[in-house]
Every structure is written in structure tokens, then in C-alpha cells.
Length: 297
Image (tube, rainbow, N blue to C red; front, top):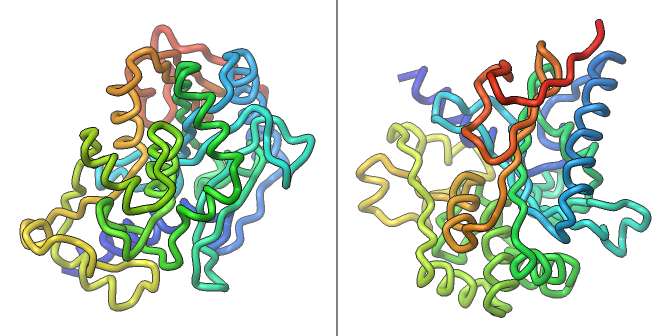
């Protein structure tokens, strides 16, 4: 029972912390010079791929806390925009995202450069980034919507929950904000209710996370975890449906088949990238067809 409760808390903490600026909710973690150099080189690899794509915007996701026990690699999604944002001039391919401000106990929008976004993982030695390059007919309005601060704030909910139900407006998590902004960019809704209605009509259906009932106990101790917005029948079946990067990518790829997925990782073997293939191997181990950039010792 203790093991299940610990797993539940890991899921709650992982999804919440993944939505915050690097080390925002977590304990401080000093990087070595070698780790800093690796992360900067990894960021450059991702930035070069984005710059070479010609896209105006992309969905971008990163690994955070280790959630492999739940079959999850990515926990935090955001929107990367080629031209950056007015609040961050001179920062091409900046990232706009929702995060949970732990000290304030409230969600906030946060603009960040790629280096900061990439560095948000708990593991400085192995990290993954997924980029979904949308076709121009989707990327252009998404870039405009992301840069529309009034719209971005209008879709920001005042109450945060790491496991927010995707079709209720009581709470919101970082990935749900991305889903609703994608809806606004595509179909024009400017309220959470209308965005969610459009997502449901268009077949957005996040795959439920199968978790023990002990997960619900964590809600008594973790301020960013709530269950009041979830259907009882799902909770009774041990299923928690919430927006996660995999569901966002699946929805976008179904709607825009021309979307192109890039995946990157850094690990002991070096820097890896793969273009529109199967997911990279766990542990960032190279396989045939991967682009490998070895790192000197």
C-alpha cells in the first residue's frame, strides 16, 4: 500500500513540477559544468532543427520527473513560437506555457527560452524533447494565438490541478491550457467552455492513466491535486483522465496528417535525434537510423 501511495504522489508531483520553471517546485539542483555544457549543446540541436523547419510554431514537450512506471515519458507540453514574444524580445523560438507557481499557489503563464525549457527535467544526465511541427495552415494561427496575450490569459484558469479533467472548467493543468489554446487557434473560441466543447466534438480524448485508488488519497496532502471535477465512474474504475503531451500530439496528428514529429534526447552515448520514426529508446540508447552526436569526455 505504501508503494502504491508513493507512486500516486510521484505522478501528482511529476505532472505538477513538469509544468513549472526549472526547479520551480522541486528542490534546488546544481548542475556541473559538464552537465551545463551538455544541456546547452542539446538545446542547440533542438533549436537548429526548429530553425531549419521553416515552421512558425510547434507543440513542444519535455520529460520531467520519471513517470515511466505509468508508461509516460513526457509530462509537460508548451507552444514554441519562431518569432518569440513581445515580453521576451530577441529570443527566437521562445516557449509559452502554463506553470504552477508554488510560492503563490496559483497557475501562471511563463515565457521561456529553449535552454530553460530543456533544462526543466529532474534528470540532468538523460532528457527527452518531442517537437511536433504543424503544417502552415495550423502553425500560423497557433503562433498568432500564442502571441495574443489577452487570449492566452482568457484561457488561463485561476485554479490548478495536475490531474485536471479535460472537460470541466473547475481546474486546469499545463497541458490542458495548450489544448484549449490549440482549439482557439483552430476554431476561434475564446472561452474555456467553448474550447472544451470544440475539443470534445472533434474527438479529443486523452487516454486515461490507470492508477490505484490510493492516488485519490494524495489529494489530501498535495495542493495541486484534485478529483472533484472527475466523473465518479472513471474514478471507481481506477482511471484518471487528464491532458498529457501524448494525447495532444495524437489529436494534432490525426487532424493534420502532414504534421512532422521530431524527437531528441541526451544521454551517456551523446545527443540523439530521430525524424518521424518510432519513439527513441529508453535511456537514450542509439539505434540504427538515429542521428548521433557523440560527446567528448
